[in-house]
Amino acid sequence: MKTIAHSFRPVLATIPLASLIALGCEPRNAAKDGLPPAYTSNQITDPALHEAADEIRTWATQQASTDQKPLYSRVEVLPPVPTVQPYGVGVFQQEVRLPVILTTGPGWTGMKLPEKEAAVAQAFRHISERLQALNHKPVLQPTLTVQTPQGMELAWMNQLDPSGKNVHGDE
Image (tube, rainbow, N blue to C red; front, side):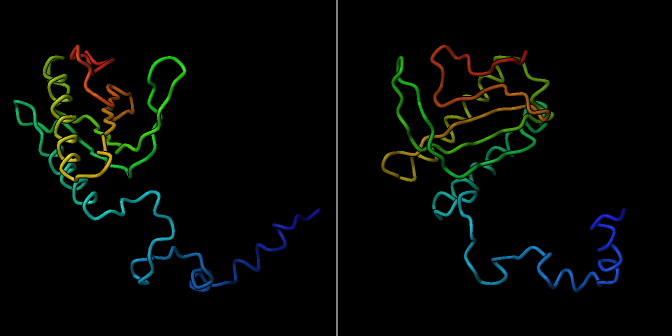
């Protein structure tokens, strides 16, 4: 018994690849077509925030250990998202935050834990200061995540821990 797929196989084989592309199999480039992007939820659309995100990426990629190895191999600054913040038992408040993800690089592994804590605190402060300078009302705050290249989360911060313990799971 022949399946429907077997019936169409000879027909598809005779259609030139260029025809399939012309039929809409090629991804469209909205910028090339002069159209605004259809989905902006995965993009930073505010020009001032876009500039700040670029500056944060540049700053983070320039961070190095004492032996001049890069601390971070990848820096991602995502669009602002509403985040639910816990305030006590059963009480929550939603606020918009800027997610920043730093993936550790070769310089990270050679550092001692106090140096890693200092590097994470410095990154959080730098990002916070850069966002403060935007004069958004209310002030846009960061959520900083530090992870290994394998995806293991080492720190997830909405504020600096007063005890200085921001890095977890990394010795």
